[in-house]
Length: 233
Image 1 (tube, helix red, strand yellow):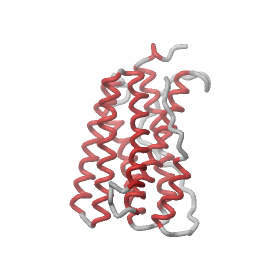
Image 2: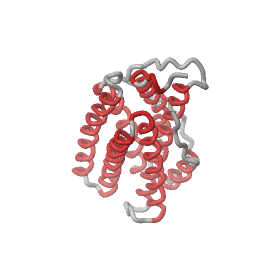
Image 3: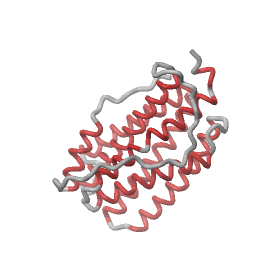
Image 4: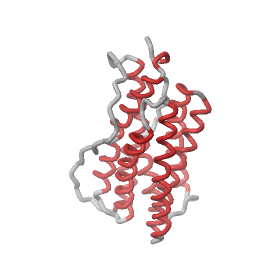
């Protein structure tokens, strides 16, 4: 499966942006990736050059990039006082959205354009909820943050239903929703650290990104299992 890679140095950009947002030179220990509740699905890839392996690698790259670019966009927005029209914020958001489009194109290349568009709509919504949570924290609006967390909870169910349908039940809605809970929790912890100007944001964001290979592995396995004709040699 063909995936489009963004030619950006997301982790390096993040270090520069978060360094300014946190305003600290303290060294912090690296964190390991989070555990996952999602079951492993064997995609049957015999070697690194196989189509299933390429799918897994592409999804891993794009999902990890999503976490780092989301962190960069959030830190930039906080640094700009929540002004989403600031040039740096707009650039960060546009780069993050390009990653979302790339993910939707990966989905669409297997399941068709309609599925790709549905994925993109859901994916953009969940990013918007993270933005709302961030803006609520930046302005002291606890109700806005609570509403955003409730919306993220609803999103997990909606996205789980989408994956369940697309993969013909190879990855259940319940397993997907549980997996997304880890993504939501780890990214919210990183956002809270950005808002508090806490240097622990670095290992927390690394932990959030470290969880993505497991997500990619499960998604790739289910996609291959449900569309094996597209991945045969």
